[in-house]
Image 1 (cartoon, rainbow, N blue to C red):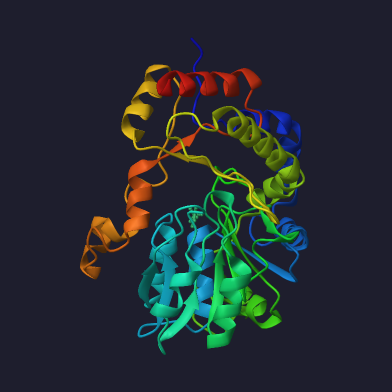
Image 2 (image 1 turned 180 degrees about the vertical axis):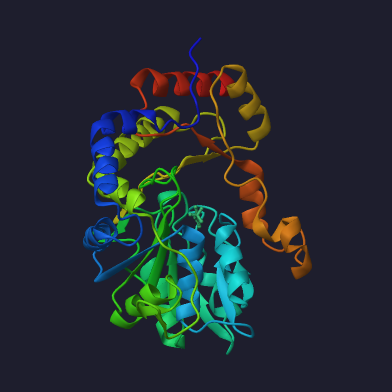
Length: 368
Ligand SMILES: *Cc1c(COP(=O)(O)O)cnc(C)c1O
């Protein structure tokens, strides 16, 4: 019996190990560890990759979201619309800004924010809409951006899971007024530690973000505003520059694995697979399937040493942390249903063909 982990970063790092070591050496040789040439170069390269004018690198994805909201002037008394199904940092960044969280349910098919439900929650207090490109599938960004503009509301994309995804060849992270992303190691573009970035076409937002991430500094020891410390390390920037060059290839590998899963698991049991959508490129950050027998399926797979995961078992509105907001089971029924029935199958660049085959074989074995 084989064993298949849920995820392995080993193959991608093995491939570029020498380059990473050289990058590490280069940073040691400069003795410059914070906001040096590597960060500046990475910002330029990631902005170009994303198709935007500016990238501002920060310490992590949560900070990128928080800083984006903050720079739009969002504070207590404002409302920010978020999807009911997301990784909890989307919500916590809004909480940290002081604004009130206004969740909307998601589409059962795309797992992303349901744009048809936005109108009914927009009020005169709404200051931003934060769609999430969940699992690497773009939300309906053009429609959400347009709706936001019509109401004078900014769209802030949470693109933590969307590196390299696109709609009509326009990369996610370039649709809104500003977008936030994360380089957490397991993301499609992951650092060897924490990292994040803001992407924007606005000179003003980029300038303010650069100030805000570094104690409000414009010039050494001169502080215009009260900022925070949220800087990307030189070392992480050096690693990210190396990994960015491979991002498209690694995403292609994920897409290939996704296609094999889709071809082999279609109409197997009651399994619902992620679908490809015209004009959308998905990066398959996660390969999420749905079945009414989720827990039994997961147990069966684990008995055959195929590791799976659930993203996410409990939606933010039912987390103890958000108890005080007063949401109950039943408030966002589609998100809740998704959390009860989804399972993420193993997926990573460098996953071997035999491993993919074994996952397929075990999955079929459960459902026949
Ligand atoms: C990972 C992630 C974040 C937060 O990123 P960190 O770098 O861990 O702070 C935010 N939103 C989504 C959707 C994520 O997947």
